[in-house]
Image (cartoon, rainbow, N blue to C red; front, side, top):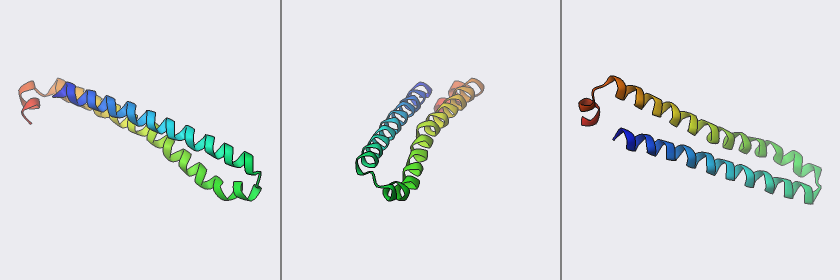
Length: 91
């Protein structure tokens, strides 16, 4: 059960990072294309806060979820070293 759970957490970590990075690239490329083709200064001023918020949100997902899953895996490994196997697997 421990190995399955840690593998699942590692998979979630990689998936979250990959999707966040892909979304970050899509958002920034599309923003670059729209802002460079339109050339409207008012458009840039109106959508820059939303663009920044989206970037920060995707960055938080891409870094936060892998960090949380890494800490969770360490806690599981630490708990399995302290708690006997019979008690850990019984739950």
